[in-house]
Amino acid sequence: MKKVIKIALPIFGVIAIFSIMRFVFFFSRVISGSMEPTIHTGAHIIGIRIVNEYACGDIVAFHREGRSVIKRIAAVPGDIIFINDNNKTVGVNEAVDAATRIIQVPDGCLFMLGDNRENSFDSRYWTEMFIQKETVFARIL
Image (tube, rainbow, N blue to C red; front, side, top):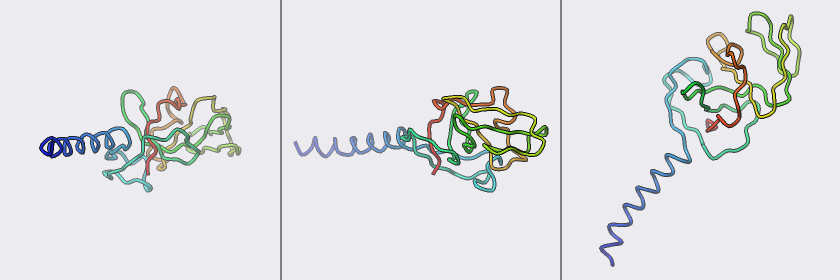
């Protein structure tokens, strides 16, 4: 019996650690400068997968076009987004000068922005401007 415990305990420990690393936490390395200065290019990040509620301002990881992407939630369902012609000025629930597009975030969707507005391919430029909440899989810590 002691032999079985000596063998089973380390195996159980490895399985438990693997499960926690795979299903609870998200680990990645940032490959672009779209979130600078908050998250620098090359930085290693950790996120938590067991979150069901996300709020404006949260930095999250989500799936888009077969890739994992890191961005900040700029607007949630019901928010009104004001964007000007050059796509650089964005107002959420607050008009911006010369706003040419005024859009409401649909139910079940999020509007995403990178912190580095000059170097971020985000909701302002995507053909499908919003992401589905279901594509979000981790909140970055």
